[in-house]
Each structure stands twice: as structure tokens, then as C-alpha cells.
Image (cartoon, rainbow, N blue to C red; front, top):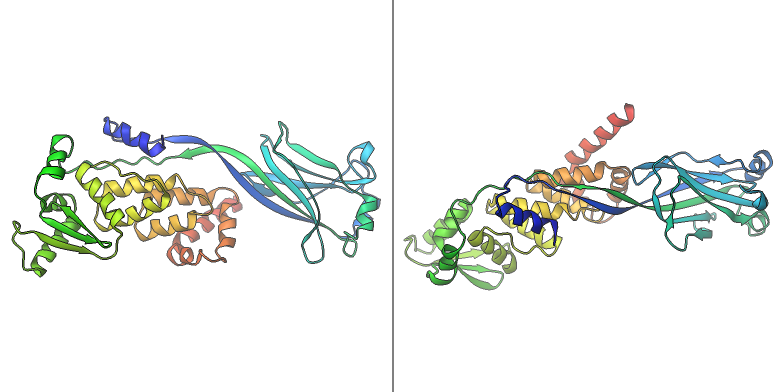
Length: 364
């Protein structure tokens, strides 16, 4: 059972102001490049068991370092170059680690990668025999005596998927039980809705009571068709919406219950419709559902959607996601790619706010 279903059930049972959280493991990935010019000189000056270390880089909300032991780490591997990673406490479960020596074209020419998930109860791990000195020089992996190594690291981070408290506004009247059945099945429809190539039946007084926008649209449609009398059937044309979205909208209007939001795209389209017809409760339901699916692949569209349709809950969730370590930088880089152009156009103020907060944090 999804979190949104649980929340909906509890709210119908009387808990109107309700928030929730879930402990959700997620994967965080980062890469770091380490270059050692004059590697032979480093090998001659750095003692066995000693390392040269990279600057810190963030993955999974913690700082990491790459370590290179030019003359090996263990006594039995002193004729090898050893590579390791280290970070501060607490330890993480590393899902995947890969070290690659890059050639002159910055492509991997020699790679060592973990074959399975690495479960460490400590803050350090290494390839003690990453590559032998003989293979390093014979394989021509040094470009002008410069060693360039790329580390790709994926860690499992367990965190709290916070939910912002969303108070639902009450329905304007009771739509439960026998009344709903009477309206939906027995009373004669007096509105024809033409949407997405389909014709749907509805009741004017219900639509008008639930949505001020639909009330205005029905009044205009009646006047246009010369049928302003409320006793005459009205034909309402909706040109900018799919039929399945309007059917879900009608389900909510008649039952005050959330429709099945089986995919983020469904919630996104229904949110747009809810905003158009000023159905605030349905809009909040869709925001909740979209908050559950925020990730690097969806945060751009979600933030743009939140900015266009004034969705404070969804916007806050997106900002919180982007504020976590590494995500903002990755998003700014991704903005150069296809699909993020709309984000720059719609969310310039949100991104500027995040950048300013990040700069203030660094200054502290």
C-alpha cells in the first residue's frame, strides 16, 4: 500500500491534519579525478605504506578522499600501486566502486571494479594490488609521466523521506454514501462534456458547487448555445485535456476521494487540471504523490511544474532534494543538457535561491 493511500485512509477516518515520513534507502553516485604529475618522482620520494591524497569530494552527503600509494600499502604488495578510498564516520555500505586509469583522450585504459556490493563496517577500503609497477610502465598508462585516475563511487544512503503537513480543505457538502450513488447513477445528467474525442455526462449543480471555474464555464457555454436556462442540457467543450484526466477529475468531484494515481505522469496531468478548475484538495493530493517520486530524472519537471502552478508543497520538496550534497551541482551541470532548458526558464528564481543559500553556507 502506497504512502498516499495510507494518508488518504487515515484522513477519511478523521485525521485531517497529518504528516508522515518513510525511511527510504537511495543510491548516491559521484566521481572524482586524481592526477599525479611526475609520478616517477612521487614513487621515489613517497615511502612504502604512505599515500598521496586527493581533495575531498561529496557522495551521499559525506566527504570522501582518494588515496594513492605509489609503492603499495601492504608489505606483500610493495611492487604495486595501491588505490583506496576513505571517508569520515559513520561508515556507509558501498554498492559499487571503480578505479580507471585514463589515457590521453581521457578514456579508461585500465579499470578495476567491484564485482559485487561492498559492505564495509569501517571508513576505509582499498585495491592493494591495483596495478604492478611493471604493468604500469610497460602498458604505457603514464602520459608524460602523469598518472590520471578516475574513481566512480556509488553508496547506499538511508535517510528520511519527509512529508510536509498538508491540511486538506473540507468538501463544500457531504458526497458520501447514498447521495453519491443517487447523483452518479439515478439523477438525469444535464451536462454533456466533450473532451478528448469522448462525451461524458455530468450534473450541472454538482460541477458548479465544486468548482467556481466550472460554474463560470457552464454559464458561458449555456449563453453561447442559447441555453442559459438551468433546466436545459448544456454542452461543455474542453479542448486542452485528455478524456482520462477529466474522468479522474469527475471521480473526485463526485466522491471527494482521490483517483488512482498509478504513475507520476498521471499525477502531473491531474495536478494541472486541478489547478485549472481550482480544486485545491485534489491539487494537494497530486503534489503529495509527485513528492514521492522526486529524483534526478524528475526534479527538473517537478520544480518547473511547481513554479508554473503555484505548488508550495512540491516546490519545497524539490528544493530540499536539490539542497542535499551533490544534487545542486549535478543539476546545474545537467541544465546544459536537453530537457533542462525549461527548468532554467521557469525556475530561475528557485535555482538562484539555492545557489545563494549554498554560498552563505560555504562562507560560514
